[in-house]
Length: 337
Ligand SMILES: Cc1cc2nc3c(=O)[nH]c(=O)nc-3n(C[C@H](O)[C@H](O)[C@H](O)COP(=O)(O)OP(=O)(O)OC[C@H]3O[C@@H](n4cnc5c(N)ncnc54)[C@H](O)[C@@H]3O)c2cc1C
Image (cartoon, rainbow, N blue to C red; front, top):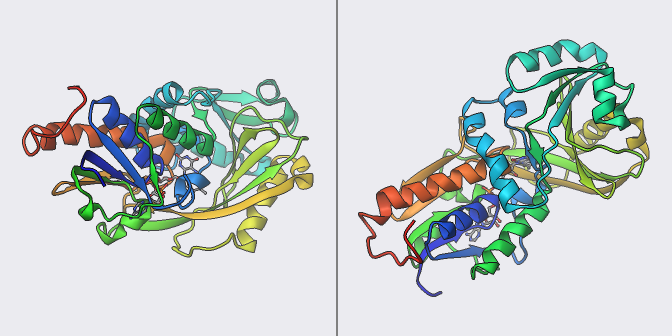
């Protein structure tokens, strides 16, 4: 492999966002990916693609909003398929107290009633009496988004080297950005996998314009419309590192919840059942850690698409602030940032 100034190892959402950011800041970048096809072994392939910092704020840390909000503009600039129509949170009548609790833990929402729900999502008319509408949120199809980032890299002369498994320490480069996801556990012992399962279904009988979350005491569910009658139903969150197919219990719970959202899901075709392990640090927030000339960017947990642009900025800042000027003043660059 030719000597490059920066090698990014891993072409999941973290690696692709880092590569693009570094390229935009003028560095020479190469990307290697062990899978033979883009997304073939990546957790990013399984994601729902919600860009929902305020909904997630209700269940996670405040940093999520600070880091995640600018991502919505980032994705809009870098992926034309980004849909900015907000998201909706509903609950069945018996779970309405959960909706109020959810609201009390976050911001940037509007309470809407039966008419408001029908106006936003005619397909749900009459099914729910109250909902929270988060108008500033967005969503995307992760698989098309990954392909769009790979195309953007290729247009700038960076072809992802597929089928190349590389240990970051062995890479011939001035700086190595380790974006191996859970595979980086050899170097990050506190990284764990959190199992997530999802189901993709197709039905012409349900129309949704935006992701809908349904609060449920046991399994909060979301459904993300993918167009052409496709819907991603997600996702379980299980503290288990078991790989392998979706369990019967999880499939039943996900499909039951979808059926409760709209009975027409009962006639939908199951297109795909998928599972993967989300890479997470103990506080469930991402980090960039420096290890000599290797920067490890990891821990995106359930927010890979939401937080990868911020993680990429942090990687680039670290290279420019503490690696480039001092340790690697000779680093080849296309132009100065
Ligand atoms: C069911 C489910 C739903 C989700 N929904 C959402 C959502 O709605 N919104 C959101 O923002 N996030 C979501 N996530 C989380 C998101 O998918 C992850 O946070 C994200 O994919 C992690 O990205 P990553 O690039 O760090 O890891 P990965 O996507 O796993 O990428 C790591 C890459 O490195 C490669 N690799 C590993 N070792 C090597 C090596 N030695 N040499 C070369 N390549 C190597 C792997 O093949 C892989 O392609 C979801 C996750 C799951 C499982």
